[in-house]
Amino acid sequence: MTPLARLAAALVTLAAALVWSPPAQAVGRVDNPYAGARPYVDPQWSARAAAEPGGGAVAGEPTAVWLDSIASVHGRNGRMGLRDHLDEALRQGADLVQLVLRNAPGRDCGWLSTNGELAADELPRYRAEFVDPIADVLADPAYAGLRVVVVVEPNSLPFLVTHVLPEADATARCEEVKANGAYVGAVGYALARLGAIGTTYSYLDIGHHGSLGWSYYREPFTALLLTTANTAGSTTADVHGFVANTANYSVLREEHITKSTIAGQPILQSRWVDWNPFIDELSYADAVRRHLVAAGFRAGAGVVVDTSRNGWGGPARPTGPGWELNVDTYVDGGRLDRRLRIGNWCNQVGAGLGEPPTASPAPDVDAYAWLKPPGVSDGASIPIPTGDESFNRMCDPTYTGWPDSTPDPTGARPDSPPAGQWDAGQFRDLLRNAHPPR
Image 1 (cartoon, rainbow, N blue to C red):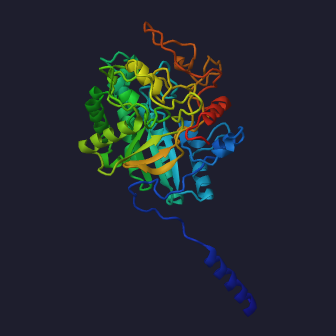
Image 2 (cartoon, rainbow, N blue to C red; image 1 turned 45 degrees about the vertical axis):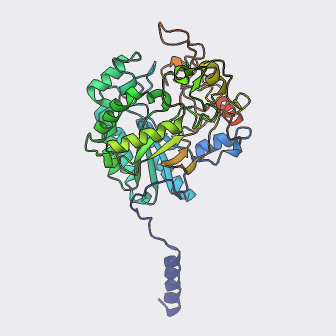
């Protein structure tokens, strides 16, 4: 090689060295993973949102990636898998990815149908075919620069309190998964595997104020969370925080309900409040977080609140308190949450986008997050002979309640597609009813 050629080669090597940067290195966990982070925007959700009228106003918001089957981890039917999302996050320059793991054995035991792929006795498959591949991907050094928030199996542990005997809503499926330890074993194993990865932040579901707010649930649920956090190799140190209102509709603050008694009666007696000491999500999340920390969870544990569908804006939004004729007229006239009953959860009519994703919006609240991607259906409103999901009557607008109960409409939207599919009508309604407006 001539001296000139050697000089040219040296210059190329030097130039490469100047532009090369080493792989991102993992750092110790921070107290709030959302603080100062740039969250990942799912391009597939973003494209669907942008294609809707006015959707460009929110198409750039970060949403969570739901892993709800074994196939979803690897990608299926044109949808991105976990590694695809992480690679895209790096391409975007994001440093925070939000995941929801939702594939527990015997999933959805408290609902009128189950859409899970794993039977109640398939905990070994859950561990080996679902959690292990997720953990293996997240542990790849290529993703060491990403903070990964993981919501672990929402709507699982709460059902082991609200839908087991002697509760009136007890189901045989919830009794089964309580007896065989499927949910506890699944969540505990996920916490242990994810807790060994220094870039993950696991959050446990605490339901919402309309599911677990009543005082008699507090100690049984606390005991259940502690047991779960110390199962299958996990410890409470593997629980970074808690998550409330996942994929639900409970408002942050019922700002028009300020009086505790009307006409000499406590508002606790109203049909809507029904003796629940909490009337909104922030009061509930704060009280539960403090109670769980006192019981032994991490002192710095924060709460993430899903605000993707709890805005309840639009023309039906009350502008002041209800008439003070009695407790029901006062509460029903002023409440921002316009559901027909607090337990309704499927594709609710009148719902709107809530607060945009925000880090550290309130004391001990790590973030408002859009965990449920707006516009993604909760379930089909009519039976669809595709085999993709079991028909859940709570998604049927004509259904009037559990057998032998008084009529209690579901408040679900008509013409909704199966769970997980894009519902353009729902998205447009959420945008129209957003609060704050978009």
